Image (cartoon, rainbow, N blue to C red; front, side):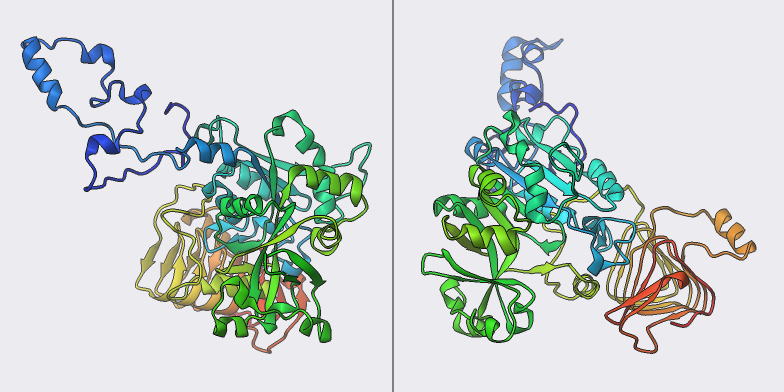
Length: 520
């Protein structure tokens, strides 16, 4: 193991087990670092007689020197696991214009939208890939991709690929015009089609299967198990699926399966009688009777595994004009290909609308939360920012996530997410709300200078009340404001005034200024 050039995140924390002899625990630590294994001495140094000692004394001393440097073994220490994962590539779809998440997508791509106080949506599939040992990752982008590209470059620089055996990469593939493709991405399938030539390239000659993922879902999943099921069933295509109830069923593509898990019927977002026709006995998926009765539909998660050769042929030859995987390519391919279902019966949320985004964020502050970003075995990674801990001065806080770099003074925070570098002044109440924080700090001198000029500093001014709202980054909200959607408006575009209302949720725009005393 060569420790030169390791980036942040590649070194693993030390873990010591009392049950296992120390020498055995360190057996995976290579001679490149530890030499002959005795406290990191090289073999040359270990064979040198120390002044004032006899060779017999030195041999006796070395006999008791069995301690080695302790570093946790890499996650992918097993050569067979590495060889399996090296034959898998992942494609993360950056999504379209993100109109349902507007105005959060006004100046950023959907996967770059901040979530959970310190993360971005793209961190979820990226971390799932890394934790699953998948290190060949493509991200397809099209709209407002500047901040997404910046975040990916800062966070997921694999460098020499030491962690993954030297062949790992993260590549951003933007929509471009070529002599053969003069259109922007027309859909999920068309986006992959325009870059299908990559899988015929020599660099990907060992790739056997391609995992296609979405950049706007919140969940934790081992993709290696997903691929193993795909291979064990000898499927051409495998869909991730989950059981859903009546309330959510019509928002998804639904399917029916046979006793062996092969998909026999599809319906894209059915309603009424068509919805009733898609009911199945989900106990065949392993649900108990009560849960099967509550969730009688099988929905597609919008994530897929394709055999590489099947994917390329379907997109370039069989269905060259079909633009969408879920609505076109996969249902049509099921007539002549083996299409399997893979059950995922855990927390999963589609962050596609302002309401689902808002609800999923506030749910992170619940006790216990349905989803946690931190897990010691499968953490969700994000950009290292090296910010100081949050500072709270005489605050009342309950059921909240306070991110690093925040400063809160004599305020009340309940059921809220407070993002990076947020500043909340005295007398404020933040309840049932999400503050995304700021991209930078303003010094006290800068803040004083702004206020002298009649402008507002970044943050939330004194005695302001915010509820049922999202405050985007770098917003400047004055003192004595009330942002609660007092009139109960469901939809309203008031961008010139610095805010937007969707599904009854007020969103204060990025870089907006809300003057002192404003009531929304």
